[in-house]
Amino acid sequence: MTAPTLAPTAPPAPLRHVSAPGVARLLGTWRAGGPAYRALADALRAALLAGTLAPLTRLPSERDLATTLGVSRTTTSAAYAELRERGFATSRVGSGTVTTLPRGTATHRRGTRRPLAGDAPATDVPAGPFGRHPGGDLIDLAQATPVASPALHAAYERALEALPAYLGTGGYAHLGLDEMRSAVADRYTARGTPTTPDQVLVTTGAQHAISLLAQTYLRPRDLAVVESPTYVHAMEALRAAGGRVAGVPAGDVDALVSTLHRAGARLAYVVPDCHNPTGASLDAGGRAAVRAAADRSGVTVVGDETLGDLVLDGAEHPPFAGDGASPRVVTVGSASKTFWGGLRVGWVRADAQTVHRLARTRQASDTATSVLEQLAVVELLREHAALLPARVAALRERRDLLAGMLREALPDWDVPTPAGGLCLWVGLGRPVAHALAGAAAAEGVLVGAGPDFTPDRTAHDRVRLTFTRPPEELAEAVPRLARAWSRVRS
Image (cartoon, rainbow, N blue to C red; front, side, top):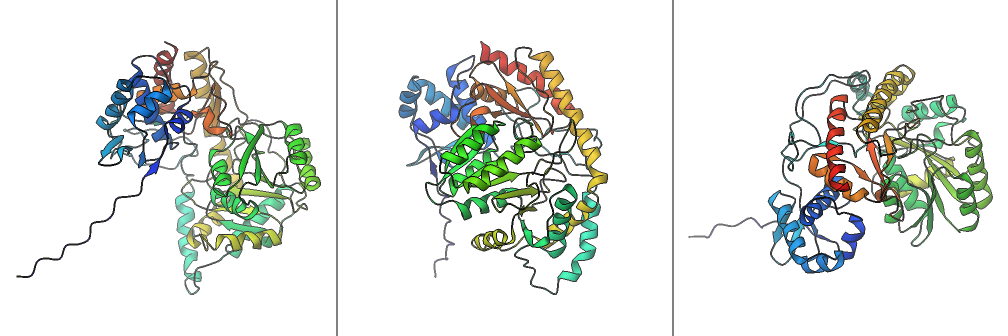
């Protein structure tokens, strides 16, 4: 009798590794009120849920972590045990304690909600149990992603009607569909930056555009200048390309200009519109000064205008590229914040030579952007002026709601009212951002700890709170944050 043939067992997924000093740097000031082991478990869990600590990461040994953090091994052992009990870690033979995410973990509340103007109809998303907080569901104030535009579904319907005209082609438009490039160029021109379609490269989202620019302009150990704080994933892209990332204070044009002239940088990344995370924008004079510095220094400056449509107070800002003549000024845009994050369509506006250079870089990882997605964005851009006011009004209402409730419930916090964007850059008055993030996660609220948004992991006295969730969730999040703050203060 022939023995049955067994299918080969798939090898386990490769593990990342993090050292004890690496965990200490990641968590910052993690201690909160209550037992130390629970505060440590909460901080590690918050880092996992925020994405700053990846799943399938082998944690340092209990002994090494205890020594580095200056706690007893009993504390680290109990913290790891709590993570395993709640599904955020597992034990592997030969690998020790490995981080995981429990099945069913979601970042949405149960139940229905009343949509606001600018929201697309949404179905309920079941959420798995989490922690000890009341209700058992997470409220995500860490991710800055608005819900879809109500016009999205109809735009896809029209895109599907247009799709048959492209089915006889290979489907690869390496620079982007002609219609898409023309629509983006027209938008720039209407705003005051004359642009032709050959100056536009369509990408698979703005993050893809930033990564392409980093891969094209940076060699290992080249210096890249960013604002501090700034967009987390931009820093990741610059470092992934081998760059050394240095920061200048966000909004300090003089410091940025001085750094471009004397630091020997190869690339600079700025968010001139509705800055992430502060919500501030550069004025016309600041934009002109940065463009002039780029030309004089020879440093390519990338202006990320992804949030440019989300001006909540005041008038639309002048385009970062100005007259568009400088080859050293490149801008990045996206459909994600204006229409929906699930639309993975972005673009780069640059001189034609740079566009083709970037297109060559993309061939190593991504040959072209989805045809159907581009057709849908073309439809949405045609309705841009009609759709934007409702979007902005809904976000303004949520900003004011969250800021007002935070000021009332937590009067010792510095809660600004940003003029644009999707988040509040809140001052805590003490360097306990990671401790608060851990305590908040235990209460069922995800927040962004300030150090995650800075190249040198400062801003320990700040947290980023987004206001894109429905009003009911924002209202429910505030008392949870108050309970978390009470734990930290104690």
